[in-house]
Structure formats: C-alpha cells, structure tokens
Image (cartoon, rainbow, N blue to C red):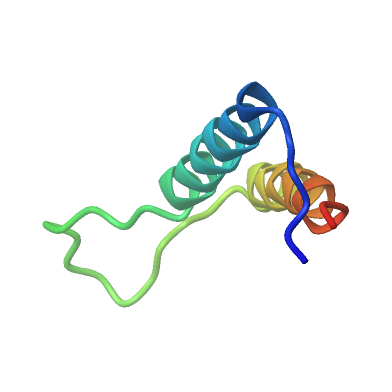
Length: 64
C-alpha cells in the first residue's frame, strides 16, 4: 500500500537529487572538443560529488 508524504517533502527530494546528480555529471564532464586520450580530473571533487549524491539517495531510500 502506498504511503502518503507531504508534496513539499517529495518536491524537495526531487530537486535535491536533480541538483546533486547534475553536479556529479558536471564534475565528470568531458568537453566535446577534447582530442586527447587522457583527461585530468580532480579526484577530491569527484568523491565529494559522489558522497553528496549518495546522501540524498539514502534519504530517498528511507521513504516507505
């Protein structure tokens, strides 16, 4: 049986998930004009973006 939640709560989770996913994708963005076999990435930024996205996913997972 579905559980009812406040619409504002679900909207906030949706917006947070979307924003954090976009941030993660931005950190991993490869320019379309890039013509090399190697790309420099900032591992610290990637880890932070992944952890941030993971935290909102954990909050969503707690929904019943």
